[in-house]
Image (tube, rainbow, N blue to C red; front, side):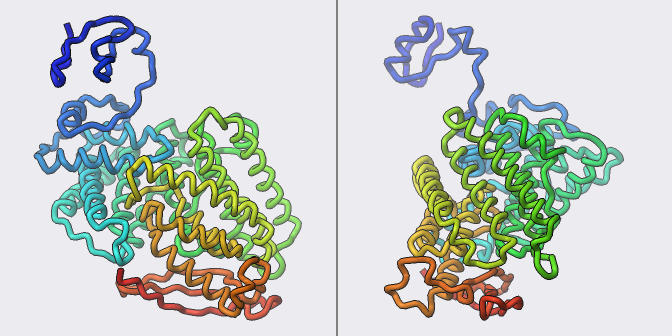
Length: 502
């Protein structure tokens, strides 16, 4: 007889389930043979359970080019428990990922470098959590001194360098380590090192593409690297950006996006990443054109991308009702932002954004529902998330949607989202957006703030840069605008914004 010792309840072994356990609201599994065919669902466990199961986690054998044993003490087990119960849910609050939910922990069992990176990430995440979402300064301006995390970080760097110098380097492990180093630098707030790791990772992708097609695991690793690269490329300048080594994900042709049904949300997300990357590269191309960008080739490319976005949207709707509504909603927001980028870039006039106020309104309503759901699931605001890209979407809406109420709603939602998404700081984004709103509305009487159309072209900010500064109590931004509507040269204004003391 099986026995539920913790509750002192004897199991009746009845099929298809145990009546005694059911009455006590416990779960009995194993009696129904059909259960063995069901999909396993990731669970988050206490430290003792984690300690017992960590070494027996099923793992993809192709990952294990390195083999060593790292002795774990109480501090390490606590860090692993935090990573399992806090970091992973923050990284994957909506989109499920085999990479994070299974492969990473499995790799850590046999690859010391990955284990050390997990430990360092966990410790830095705990440090950020201790500061809280209402820290007075941007989180990337706050030093995170932690001897234990630095020890893990240094050990990981040494091991990865040794692996990279090998005659036959384990490329899967190195790519996985590249992602983890990027996440670590997100948590530490080191922009230069973040971009360095992303550049190295994207270069590895380019080398692989020249040799062979990726397997399923490599595709997810590459999509993750590309998604992180895209999101950080948008940091600080939503238009006119010089994207650092921005690459598209390994999708061979546009036909794959247009003709093949999405098997799941992950397929749709990968396709949207590919399309978004192409749209933003198109934005870069248009911004670099001397004279009028409305050439035949550019208009044809714009129409092709618009058609692909439409086909993507139609295919996404086929998944509606079959997948997590939050994931579907967030993908719709990505589509809306990409479409606005695409449709407005050729006009080069800020008044063109007024045509998309209904789209901005729908995006805000969707994001509010998603944010409320994340807060409900986590019990309140969370400090860190990886690549949901909610902060960039809200920031873009706040500075490009000139509807007074909608843009202020976007700013208010920035106080409820994960405080950090990669290098994006929600509170920093809100401060900058508030300053842009004040700048654009500075000459308007209060009674005229009911409609967006009362803001003339020459009062609208074309572009904004977030500049690096050593001052922890302030941040520097550069605003660019046209002094008059037909002017081709933009004026610049350097602004120092004081960080609130409370």
